[in-house]
Amino acid sequence: MGACLNGSAVTETSRYLDGRLQDEERKDRQLIKLLFLGPGGSGKSTIFKQLQWLHGGGYSDDDKKLLIAHIHSQCLVQMQAAIDEYLLPSLQADCEEKLKSSIETVRRYRFTESNHLPANIVDCIAFIWNYDDALRHIFREHRDRKILDESTEYFWNHLQRITATDYIPSKEDIINVRYRTTGIIEKEFSIEEHRFHIFDVGGQKCERKKWIQCFDEVRAVVFVVSLACYNHVMYEDHQTNAMVDSLTLFEQTINNKYFGNTPIILFFNKSDLFAHKIKQVGITKCPLFEERDDIKNEHDYDESIKVLQTEFKQQCKSEQARRIYMHVTCAMQEQNVQLVFRDVVKTIVQEMFSRLQGTSLA
Image (cartoon, rainbow, N blue to C red; front, side, top):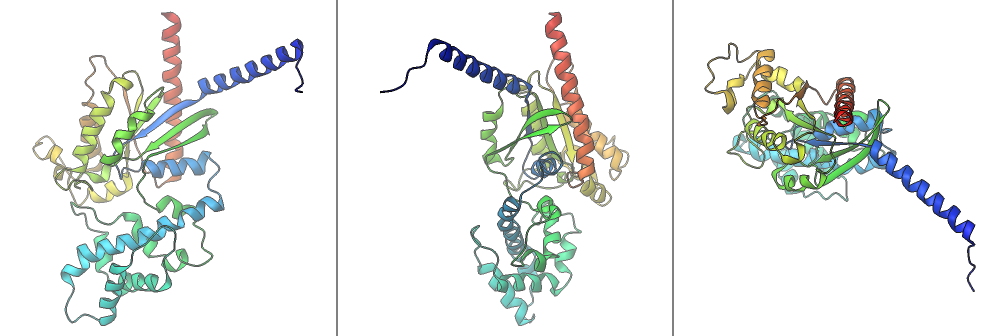
């Protein structure tokens, strides 16, 4: 026969539960929801990883080990792409037999995320990479179709270390690894004494339809654009310029009804790559600026940044003046991310305070 609670015990339990619910509701109200948007390859996930190191306690050894498969996959898949795109078309019939066999072995190998690269595949990749300087020159060129990610060179230069049996990825390895974000990644961070719930979503076209799942109660949107993509075609669509796609996506975002009163923070990312590239490839190589005759020096870093910022700022269709908070960033540099996010937090808190003041005065 079950025991019965007396009236005072029921009341006490009810008060306790009500108190807990009120605490949870108060915490939820204090939690600032921040949404990372932008096209694939813009660097959103790298910024997210930097925040994990700065404000999320870094990565446990178990989490680090989960990334080994991604690092090994990048080394293999990028070499397979390099072989098909760059090596095979120029391969001489009388080239060294070891080079031929290494290329064929790498091309045939199929990687699954449940395993690591076997020693013979590692040796073949290393031999191809060190055979001559042809592939190294590819990383110094600025073609309109991007096949190799910049960080791949870093991993190919550390093949022996990252494929050792006792290997655990370092902080630098984790920041450098590239893999597509699929679905939605979310994490709570405490930044400058404020609690943030940050969402990172995949930027490829096939992932964008999932974005709307995160739109409710967003306090601010951080839209990330790669500065270095101005002369590239998209990964998914070789007919569309990547900067044109970024601009179109930004226009759709800033004019979305869900974000009518939401602060928009625009990161022009990969400033380090842009600074190097603009010296060799002028900004007018971007279709947005091909017809512009008011650009004095298409190779000037500051002027090129300014014309890009102006172009993005003009995408706001709101009849009311709306401020877009813009930052030039380098996600690979921890200190840069830390300083920029201090400004971001300040911006969001000021916007929230202004909105509260407006509400109280109404």
